[in-house]
Length: 93
Image (tube, rainbow, N blue to C red; front, side):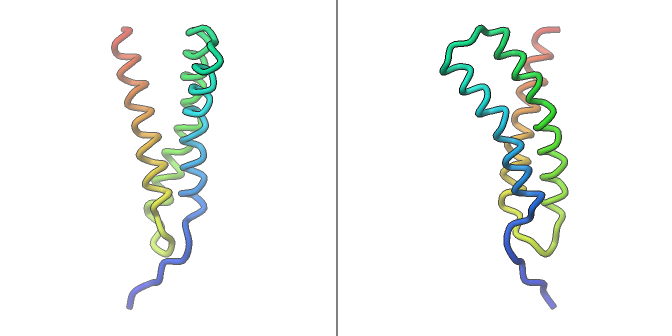
């Protein structure tokens, strides 16, 4: 007996939204021409929603009765953000 998947998971949707928030902020900062220090501040502050996106994405991926496309997308985006931040931090040690 197979369960039928119904709709996208709420955790997956929130994961995708939280993962896109810092990216939108950084793009807006680059378009408006704020100093690089302000961009760095938004990059660091962006870790909080990305950490939430990563956690919610993992919860959404493990849901069996919902579709998990948005959970995979949110987890992939937030993982890329964390890896980029880690590489940036490692390079500046």
